Length: 317
Image (cartoon, rainbow, N blue to C red; front, side):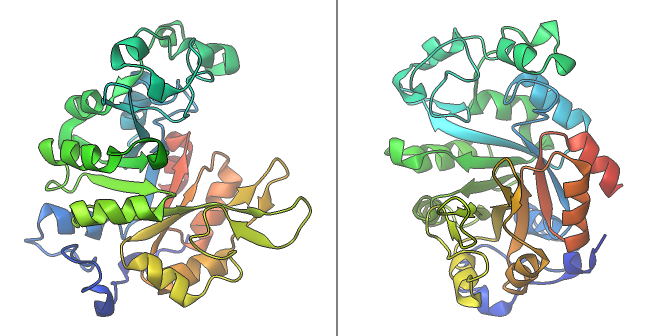
């Protein structure tokens, strides 16, 4: 696998735009935790997507605990807000798919969400990985996850559906600061919303940010690809200027590799190289098969999101 890009340093021209975020470079003996985090990002990162969610119900204690046991570099999770203003770790806007409830998550209080079974669905959906202990697992708050793992682990948080929550960014940054995760270099924030990321950057410029992108054909069978939110053009039309615009507030991009059941490939090695040449890390989601993992490793990506961190770690080692 290609590793030469891991030792690259970021251009000095971006220093002003990044505000107080120190630039990744060679690890210094006296580097503070925030700089050390950025230095560490220059190495390949195994990102446990909603925990080890191929083995256990996503975003539950078993999924996160197994991800830790599998030595993932990051615990990835989505953050949303309850009707009574609590931050919870949950992916979908609705609770139908992964609990025994139904409706919009934002309409439920934390107490109501805690009464739901967020584990049994997994045993029905994935019988090969079923475990009786998964039944009855609760939806977790962000505070609960951080209090359990502290700064021993690093967190890769997605601001989910920020348009639904008027003060999600403020509440999230405040929580991270209160728990000491920013000053300890323990957290990354990602989002598809560039406006949400820019809001976070204004609130605390020491938090590394990753701009999520999703490439797909606008019409079925169309060869021309577009990006879901319009933050960039299609991957083949994305210019250095487009990447540099992202680099003003983010340290990386998170992108899909394929689209649809037929797994249409939407990025290639040239896309990865161009993003990295513009001082952006490239993290790719969500890759669960070894063939796809190895392809990306050969391209020299900086990290991979996966439901199976054990599979990825076996290849990296």
